[in-house]
Length: 248
Image (tube, rainbow, N blue to C red; front, side, top):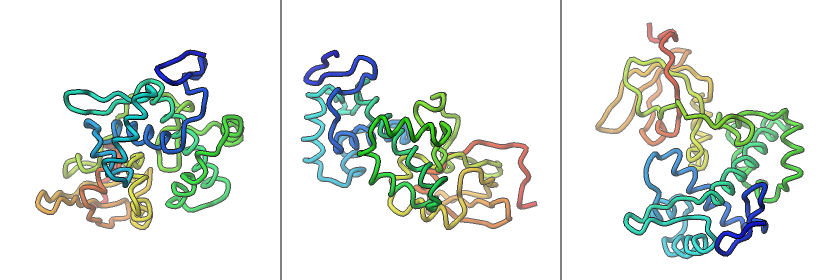
């Protein structure tokens, strides 16, 4: 065992020897996902909006996490950054969550747009032994049903996807994943499911409107859809120059 500030870490995993509370796990995950998906500095105000709590509550929790060596706060710009121990907690929770989503979707047949909420209810109680047994049972999957990489099961390579709202008219793209933060947005998965905007779907970018912040896309069936900027930002795509243009 090694000691970091006020917590004792396991030498093999780098995780706290005493399991952190559900609240601390959720805060670590939120900071990690906001840093990865929002492409900007994470501050307490962003965390308060994400967690749906008062800024005072976030401030008190961040103070506890600082004392435990899980997060650092920049004294100049107040940006939040996880320590290696905090990042490991976030990755571990993400891994459990993703494995549960795969099990609920692949084996129990729950709908694509419902497994996220169900996994949120179960992820904190999954023991390391059950987590690894579940991973083996599932065949060591590389992604969750929403297309995000499962930590520990796939190389954490540089993300080559781009938010759909950053693509320009005329391009052909394919949906790869829904961002982790997008999964947490209430009602978004249900909305995407109704529109058929799932991983693997090919799209033609028809146009963008800067005034009402919408993007017009055409799917492989020739159906035209208008999507708001916030929704489009949660959809991560790669360009497919050789894909057929469904508008022709």
